[in-house]
Length: 176
Image 1 (tube, rainbow, N blue to C red):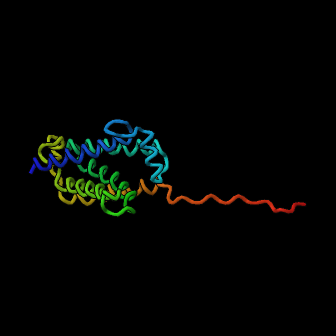
Image 2 (spheres, rainbow, N blue to C red):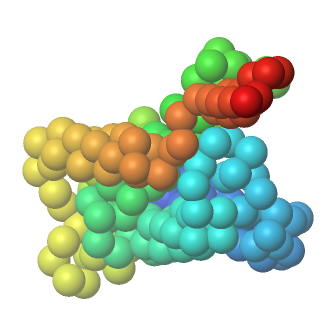
Image 3 (cartoon, rainbow, N blue to C red):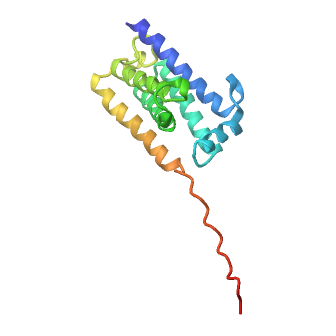
């Protein structure tokens, strides 16, 4: 069981961290910080560079914590939070990833929640700290905090639907 949890933690954690690196740099196929900022602006978010840095940093941090099995509930909540934002951005495209849907963020959310339920296993940095086993009920608050933080970030940072600029007032043709 520990081997399976280790493989799952490494795969998901390193993919989440790598995705964060792409948001803020040109490494791993990223478009640099300017590209990450433009991606957020195109998706309707405020802040551009600051939003890209926060999202990228959140993904890098939570991904590396998850991969190493350190502070696993915090890592899972962070992963769930950033992936909840991604899910809300992609939900209008439907489920399937080939249509730019939310399939991938959903898989990462559920995997992070499952890891918070199982704990990081014996081969983790939590183990020597005596934190390798968490009660099953930890998954519920981790999921709630993760989804709640993602929805709050979306609410605060998303501009919402674009509005048409008001038409300029026209002067009357006849002036005195």
